[in-house]
Image 1 (cartoon, chains in turn green, red):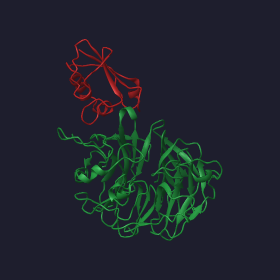
Image 2 (cartoon, each protein chain N blue to C red):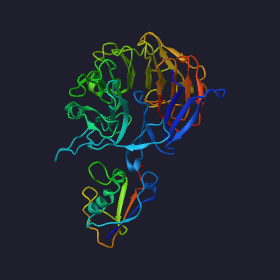
Image 3 (tube, each protein chain N blue to C red):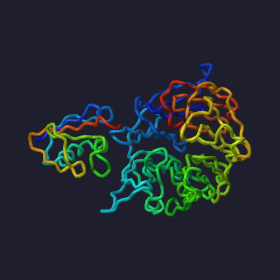
Image 4 (cartoon, rainbow over the protein chains, first blue to last red):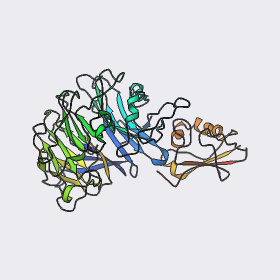
Length: 374
Length: 89
């Protein structure tokens, strides 16, 4: 059971602890990088260190690491792209040039428990990087970057394609699954030496019919993996919810639009660490709106693998609320009882009963990008 | 010797005090500055050594032309000014 969580926001990184001192037991106890754009944070449960990715705009993306719970930070290396071969020009599906340069960091995950110091980093414009020394240095995963199928990828929420999800199989750290917007789900079984696009069954409502079932153009917003049953993965996709029970060999559409009312659009998904059939989503009205339906913030929860969904709203605003939750804005702790999610309008909620009731931690934070239990 | 000054905005991320260094091109001048302040390099230049998209370098008030190779000449009494663009960021 985790009593601490981090919220990475447009204006800093906030530590929230369950102090129990107030009527809402969760309160902000530390602020780091105030005024800075903190895109992603990673609490590394293997050694207690915390990582934060900052995006400075003018000055580029940076990474920082703390070994004292955020009291002090040191700047560490960022992934860097190799020089592009002379004369080679790469263009995306829109005909825009893809430069071999780090645009921003979009995913940061720890390697397996048997790999101390190993980190994975997903970036825009689509490079995956690995560190074996706690982020002191990074190597581009060349097999994926050099795969010609990457040229089919395209930007989703950003102009450039990006890797936003990295799932390391707890049974075998060489098995890594990534999610790409827009480029489907990719899997390696050998630590990154070879890759396959494994998004069969995921379909898109927004592409020409000929591309509808092309696994490599799917706009998967987020992918998560069940820790106790790593064959089970969930994906929140641009136009629905998909589930795999065979480690991405196939995916099933479990959107069931009626039972998932008001909507199956969203960015975030969390899966219970011990119950593969239980997952949570934060729905919104689909792409052209990106708002909670009817101004009511709700969480959708399934306990039966997507056959049915409960719409959870106890403690969440139900009147003129326009909070959107980004793909990294929902997290679940190791117990599976506590979840937290944050919104673009600076609201942060915590549940201690799997979503049956929610507590408002703050309604006044900066826009929240990433929430993670420590 | 060229005098190099950095915008105040960069100072809250990485200290870049004014310095007087050798060098006859922007590349040589900045390389010498960054030789004793390696962390600052990544704030001004990208991973391939080009000026970051939203950064600007001036020589005696004139914007440099070569943002990729930094080959603009720098005279011994010049002031090199490194600042962020008003766009982006």
